[in-house]
Amino acid sequence: VQDNANALEGLMLVFKSINKFDSAAYYAGLFADNYQTVEHWRMAGDAYFEALTFALDEVKLRQLATKTREYYNKILDSGENDLDIKNNIAMTHVEERINPMQGILMLRGILEEDPQNEKALFNMGRLSMVSGQFEIAVGRFETLTKYYPENIEGQYWLGVCYFQIQDYKSALNMFEKSLSLGLKPSGE
Image (cartoon, rainbow, N blue to C red):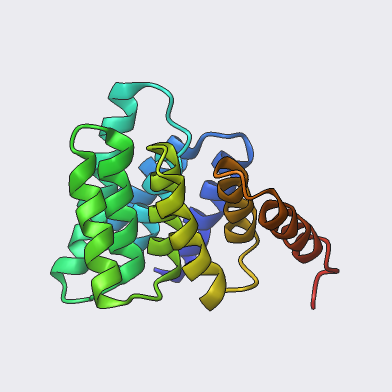
């Protein structure tokens, strides 16, 4: 099994290197279907989720979202309570745009269970921005950066939100902070 897992990882890297994320997901799915383990379901779910983020066609996006949920739900059905997986499932509902509120409600549920959940805070902040609710987004990103001060994206998007609500001094401060975090030498 380990030799096959190594071969699969190599194959997936090749497909990803040529921007064929859906092909990488397809082969991860075949492997997961064959071996039926949490580890392989996670690999397939993650690969389908990554492919979903690059999908431009609505039909393809829905197919990838469905496959993502299929593999992630197998993990949850096995008894694991993985908030990262729940977060990704929520985002498939949002990205699919059929019932985005289902995804938003899932993200809210994650934050009820874990008010400091980094991914859920980030996603709720971004979704608030997309809907033009910059004041709400500020609150989400302020909470995110309070608990995760090294989250460069959180710092940056908080700056964007401050700019949108015309708090230019705070925006500049956050942009400078995100730049300083991003310019640290690796290993620090």
